[in-house]
Image (cartoon, rainbow, N blue to C red):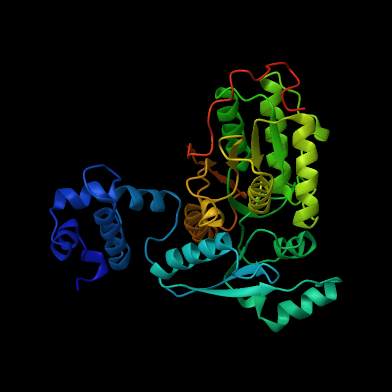
Length: 361
């Protein structure tokens, strides 16, 4: 196998039995091959440490070494109550491990238990797991905010995989849920829907607050009042009680479409529809605002914004190496942009639907 410094397009092409032209197009994201072939090229390039000239220029521009001279130890933190049952967290961890593993680094998983208050309990836990000796930490979503605040204050490089609190001295990387919600609501409005019901708890975290704010802004810009009483924020009731609440709300406000802000909201709406004999999209259109890994195997071809989870992990890993190489530069907050997958759960609003300004109420 050729040593890393001498890997060329010809090496990749020869090993894969492809032309240099095909390999080059695959690495630059150009069409003209199957996704299987493109994936094989990318995997081999990662394995051999091959970088395109554009990648090397970018790394040099940001003062980040293309190849590591020493192996570093990083820790990926996940709330213990979440564990690896969350597909979203699993994909984030895998992508961070993959990217840093290519550079010869190690990423360890550490679960964060509840009850790390007062500060003394946090310090004892930190010392037990040698957290202060790590070269950097990744702070995943849904860790308790009080614990997150302690982690953000650590001295080692930190990457927050979440929306940062105001004034936080930390780099962050996350998918842009504010824009994703705007895309989702605009799509429904463009399809003629004006009575759109929001389902989900807006106060669950900073990211969910942004979802609700973006929803209200988008509807109001279209002349639709987003009155809180016409939506469902309660998510803690047993399913039978929640279905009864959903039935009352839909009979009162007569929505033609739902935007589900979480996986839980999406599941509850589908179960409520099954119980009451309603169909999606026959009776209601629906968009789910959750990353694809969380929606997998729940609903076929659901309309959704394409929130780039795997790419977030890759970018977070790159940002960690950048921070180590540039410790004194200002903190940056990176939002990754996705598009909208139309799916099969949205159809035009019925022609007889009223179009008054109290569309969501």
